[in-house]
Structures are given as C-alpha cells and as structure tokens.
Length: 164
Image (cartoon, rainbow, N blue to C red; front, side, top):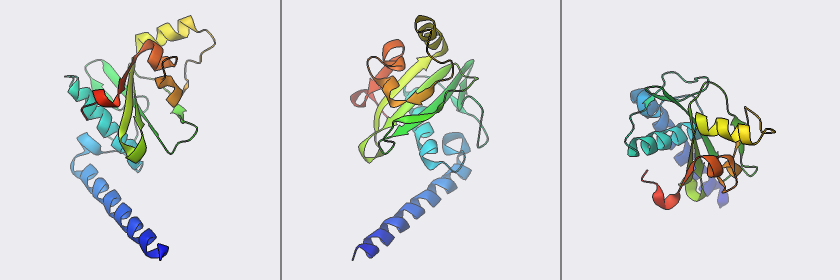
C-alpha cells in the first residue's frame, strides 16, 4: 500500500529536519539560520567549499541577514541555492551589501552539481559591458552557463572539482 511508504518517507524527512534544527542550535556558526532547511544546507555546502579554498569565512549570526551570509575580513559572501526541483531555475534577487556571490546548484539527489563564484568587481565589469543588465538581478541557474553572468565573468566549479 503506497500510504505506508508515504508515511515512512514523511517520518524520515521530519526526523532529519528535526535533527538539522537541533544541530543548528548546537552549531549555529556552521548550520544555523531560519526555517529554510535547503538554504541552511546550501550555506553549509558553500561554507565548506570556501574553506576548501583556504579561506576562513565566519557565518553571520541570526536567522536572516540582509546581503550576506559569511564574512571573512572585508569579503561579504552572499549564498544562493538552486535545486533541481526549481524548474524555472530562478531564485531571489541579489541584494546589497555583498562583495562575493556564491551560487550552489543542487542536482539529482540534492548533491552539489556546480558552484559559481563571482566577486563584486567582476559583477561591476559585467554590468558595465552589458548596460541593459540589472544591478539587482534575480539569481538564476543560467548564470552558471558558459554565457551566463558567473560563467563568463566569474568561475564555475563543476561537480568533479568540488571537495564538499
């Protein structure tokens, strides 16, 4: 009967969600945040990714921070996550203040598929070269493509380059 399978999957999901919320309270500097669990997971992946590049970002305290999620000296990193289930591949707008954007694309099974990194100077160059582009664009999956904002002006790390 499918109802038993559905209920079992719901129970596992709710248990895992609860576990992440408990860990968020215990380790807010690693996986704290609001009730957006996918956002927390994406930030955790981004945190580990940035650390793998020999940087030392610190997660901002609190459940909601305007503009950026991590700080490392004068680098203010804003993280956006796009999942496979997001069929339009579109997230919320990029908002100030930030000096670095990290876009985490979660593919099949919510595994990191690509991670894009763009700094503010690269973004400013892109806006200068493309005068019709918006200064506060929606973050989209297409930004990670070869002709996209990050693919053209920043750096996109493919799955096989990710040590997260």
